[in-house]
Image (tube, rainbow, N blue to C red; front, side):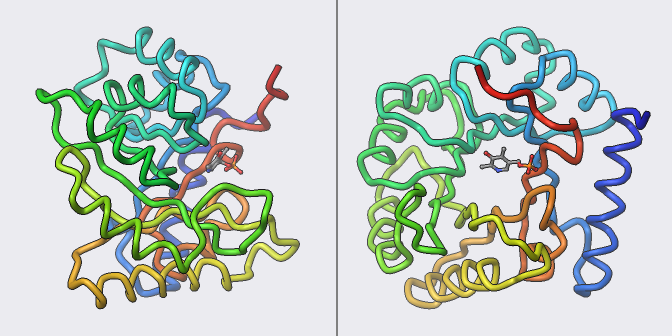
Length: 232
Ligand SMILES: *Cc1c(COP(=O)(O)O)cnc(C)c1O
């Protein structure tokens, strides 16, 4: 059975190969280890293997893990990537480094208001619903510019770019949704002369296509940690 170290190495090999094929440097693509449902001990092992960025979807689960890993806090970053209810925004503003899933001005305002003064600004991605699927979170592409303009005025946030969770493709090499998110980022930068540099897209099954389209974070869970137990 493959060890965690083997699986981490295999994912880095996939990232490096995809970067070589895309003519990109692997230093442009961060591996965000999606540790939701995994125990703190697994995060500790991944950290010991050299990983530094961890993605969580559930606030209380993440806070428990952070408490168990407090001794590592200065050498790892926590990214919130799941749907975020307003009543849980304070805990996220106080404990995370990044939020990839901002999809409303109301949530952005709360995160800015609640970000403690002693911490650096919270790093933010706007989640975009590139497939326009009614069932999913994320803003419509047409609404992105308005939200970006509003977030730019919030003092305790630093807007970095865009995030998407495209509909599962039967063909994981399909690039359409990834290209659409990349094109949207470029159009925002042109329209407002912004320096947005972040595209959070691509997961275990489609990270190659996302890297080809310009991903700067790939969010990988299953390929690193195995299948997740069903959430109780
Ligand atoms: C769970 C999750 C992932 C990881 O998905 P895998 O298919 O396990 O790699 C990535 N992004 C988000 C937003 C997730 O919720």
